[in-house]
Length: 181
View 1: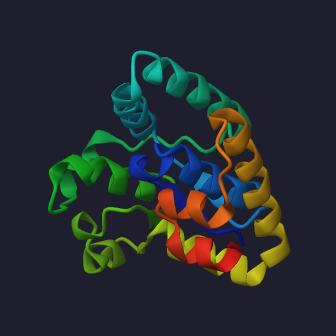
View 2 (view 1 turned 30 degrees about the vertical axis):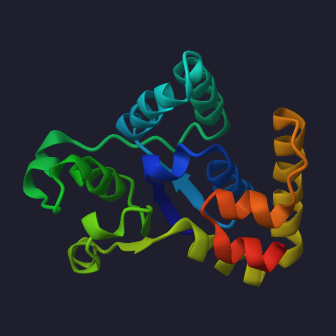
C-alpha cells in the first residue's frame, strides 16, 4: 500500500525543497496530494520573488497538475467547519488531507498541526527533511540520483557552482544535506 502524503504550501513553494520532495514521489516513495487552495497559496507566495514569480509558479503548478492528475483533492466545506487547529487558516490543509485519505501531512509548520489533533483524524505530521532522510536510508542510490539532477539544474539555472550540502542546507534539508554531502 502506497503512503499518501498531503504536501503543505510551505513545502511546495521553495523550489529545491519541492523538487526533492517530488523527486522522491516520482521514485514511488509516496503518493503526493494537495488541494487547489494549497497550490493557490504557493502561487501567491511566489509574488515575493519578483514581478514574474507568480507567473512562473502558475506554470510550474500547471506542470505539477499534468504530472499528477489525481493528486488534487477537494475537501467539502462541511468538513472544514467541524475541524479545529490552532491557526484557523490551516484548517483547509487538514480538511484536504482527510478528503484525500492521506496518511501524513508534510509541513514545516509543526506548531499549527498538533500531533494529537491529527491522530484523531488518523493522520501524522512529518517535516520534509526527516521524511526525505528516511527515504534516503531505504533507497540511498535513488535519492542520490534525484539530488544530483536537482543540483545540476540549480547550477545551470543560477549560474552558481553549488555543492550538494550547501544547496540542500539552504533548502532547509540539513539531515539530507549531511547524508548526501
